[in-house]
Length: 366
Image (cartoon, rainbow, N blue to C red; front, side, top):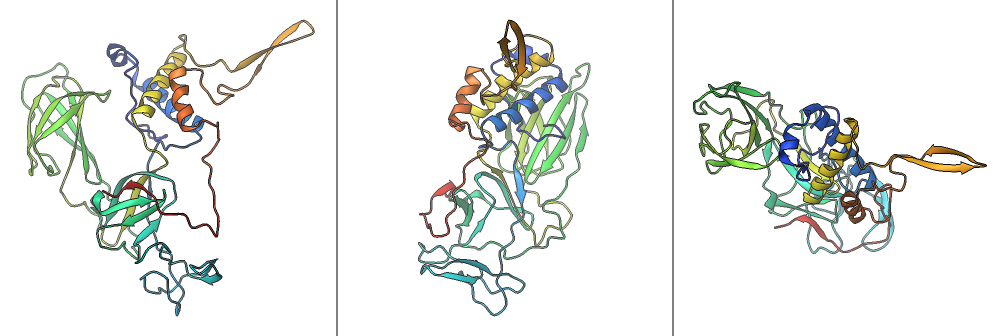
C-alpha cells in the first residue's frame, strides 16, 4: 500500500506466472496496483471502497427540556430538526427516535453509508467483538449484546493509539513488527547471504490464541506455518517458508498503548463493498496490463483514440482510455458489469421523508 494512495494489499497476481511476479520491479508493481484499484473503483461507480474509513460517532442530542423518542437522556446543546413523527405528523423536535417497527428501543448509530463490512469497533481503546453488533439497512450500526453505544466521547484524544515499528535482529533475518489496533504484522527479511540459525527473540505484543500462525509470501500465498508462543510473547521456529521474505499476521490480547484511550469511540469500515476475491483478481489482471504499458510492452489497455476520415484526410481524436466505461479486457469487464451493469458514475440514493421501509440486516448479526 502506497503512502499517497490507499488501496488493498490483496491484489491477486495469479494470472501471471509466479516466477514473473517475483522479478517485477517493486516500485512499478506498486504503481500498477494503485492504478488498477483506482481504475476499478471509478469504472464500478465507486460501489466498492479501496480503503476503509474511520468514523468517530457522535450521538445527535436533544435541546434542554425536551424529551427524546429513544431511552436517551435529553442532553443539552442539541438542535431541532423537522421530521415526520410515528403518527405521520410533521414536527420540529430532536431526532433521537426509535424505530417505529420495534416494540422496544434500538441502540443504533447511523453511519455514512453504505457500510460494506466492519473492520473494527474500538471503545475505550478495546476491540468490541463482532458478535456484539450488526449493520441494518446498509448504514445503521446496531448494538445487539444488551449494552448501549457510548453517548459521548473525548474528541480531544486520538481515535486510536499510534504504534512505532519494532525491529528484531536475528542471525538469519530481520523482523519488523507493526501493529494496528489488535492486529499485529511481522515482515521477515532474510539476511544476505542466508545464514543458519533459528528465529528467536521476544515479540512486543502477546499472542492471542494458538501458537501456529500461517505464513504468507509477498504475493499473499500461504507458504508455511510459523510458531508463536500462544498467550506469550515468544518466537518459535519456522516451518515451510525457508529463506525468503514473508509476513505473519496475528491478533494480540495486549491493551492499547498510550496515549490514554478512555472515553473514545471509533468505527473503522469499508464505505461500500470491501475487497473480495473477484475484485482482487480483476485488480491483478488490470495491474499486469498497466505494468506492461509502463514497461513499453504490448498490453491490452485501449489506446483511447478514434480514427476519423473527412474529405480524404484521416486523423485521430482522443476519446479517453475508458470512454465507454469498460477496459476492453474481458475478465475485468465481466466484474465491472457485475458491480455496475448500467455504467453509473456513482451509486444511486433514494430518500423519502414519509417512507418507512422494513429493517434489513446487511452485515453481521450472528
